[in-house]
Length: 226
Image (cartoon, rainbow, N blue to C red):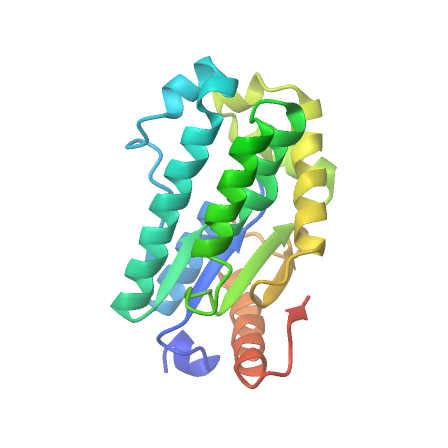
């Protein structure tokens, strides 16, 4: 019996992984995909034509960058749905508007009219009954010290040069976002409860929760679980 059958996880499930920088979204995405024999969907950063220009001038390019992300994520979500599911996604379409576009607007690097245009487009594309929302959004969370510790441990040069105050802001923005999120069912997982890099078997209780939650959700009994 494979993991999908053991934990009663439908073969057509679409599961999205969300959380701030450093919580292990990519590791969780790959571990779940391997355990369930699902495909993965990762953000395509290398092909983004605005990224370099954006880092050179936030105010000039923030709107363009967010529109590009919105279009690419929308197309990817449509592709996954048309394929028939069986996917684990690294990062959700909802974070772009709920965290990053909002942050640019509040910090003054995106104008009010650009932000309102972006929000209007996002709502028209995503916040409708026709958009294929995931069966489950898994939110990875932990203490701020745990998150910063993981960022330091993985040692990516650009992240090491980033002030801790930025990670603190992102941590708080993510917490505010998830506490008000209701576009699809949420499963919250604490990163201190498993270690997929050192113990592959720690994915098993996660799979059990996912199976239980998706069955409850499809029966209309649950919206959030921890």
